[in-house]
Length: 421
Image (cartoon, rainbow, N blue to C red; front, side, top):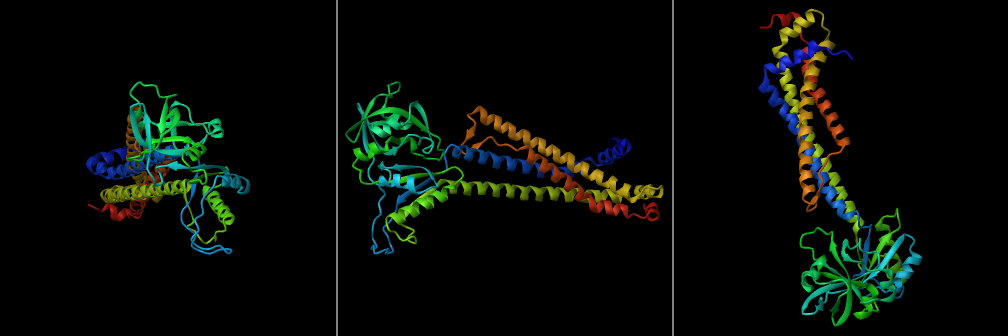
């Protein structure tokens, strides 16, 4: 490819004659790309941190009995309390096609009532007790640090086994003391500790590690909750949104218990997938805001470049007139001005992109050396697609900045220009 060395030499010469002016003009474009990359990288870091917490948790909905009926239905009066029962689990499995898995869940000291008094040798404490099932560790955002989780045999045989949170271990056991296999007493009932867990829940003030988990049916029989279930944990089949399974379960319970479909307050629920969708939508908004702010800054820098190019055209009026008098076409004049404008924006923008990427990589490296995460922030980055889009914005900005100066240069009258002082 032929490169016009003389033309580039001329561009560098022109820019070199006004170093400060060129630098200040280019800085506007540099700062726009720098801010765009930093904002997008920071947004991606926040997104990575949140998604990291969510990705191990399946799309889940929790459903519970919330309030008494408010509307009479099929001969049934108002004011009925519709409790959840263990047999509903099998009914939902067999009659609600959208449900992949469903678990019954009871507790002590979580939804009202007092925490259970727990003793080990000469140490004690009051802790909330939560029922669980085999395979629910990811739902509770738990990682087993010692021992094992509740398994299917524990569920089937109603074993008196427990997994305890890391803070429970600290309060009940002395440093170095054997934990796995030890017996703790919960409200006068002996349970064998089979595991110690930590939580991935990063919410400030989380008390998740201050709980004791035992098989749910064991909890129901041991703590006199046989006749009812506190809540259902519903996981939809693959490809089905949790809100669909959530509504289907509510409809089944309403039909089974003769509750008017319009009586919406009878069954309460919380849908984790809906919350994730909201958060993901927030990240989309952050990206859009970052692009709007950055493009505005880039265009402001481009306007500065355009103004400088207008001054350049004014200063070089005689030269442009001479070029045209010697046979230079308007296209050649326009190309010369546009090339100079695009060069300024491209170099300044590329420098801004490189500096910001190195800064993000430096922050990411520091975070990796310190565990990889700071609160809800993890591995800030800008992907290749975004970098390409930023470069396209740069080229467009450079072209737009040169349009008016180029048009003005092309319209120069050679006779008038040669008389210009």
